[in-house]
Length: 130
Image 1 (cartoon, rainbow, N blue to C red):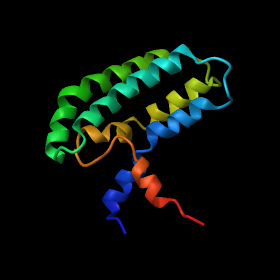
Image 2 (cartoon, rainbow, N blue to C red):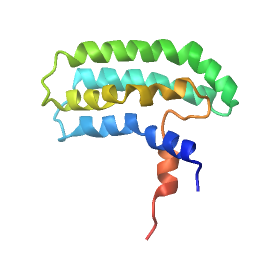
Image 3 (tube, helix red, strand yellow):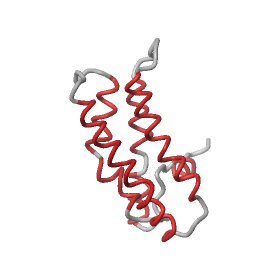
């Protein structure tokens, strides 16, 4: 059983994955340039995470402060600007709304080196095998 704090940390890390799922909506015949830009910006954050994987929590936090904070600030500003151009019914807008409404939880990994950007490992552990 996980401690309540760790349990909440694991639960909130899935925001990016859920935003991606919402963006998919219906199978598109083309890839939205705006969605592609968002994915590329988020991938840059994951690239940093891959580089710092295996470091101590304090080292990860320091690296995130130096490398991820500027990228995340730019991502948020870009998303807010681009979101204003979209209809509320647009699938990309729905994904942006999802992540922007949860921005504090999404960006919490910057302040705590123990938190992962993704909670895929936690999701894999929680799968019930029949």
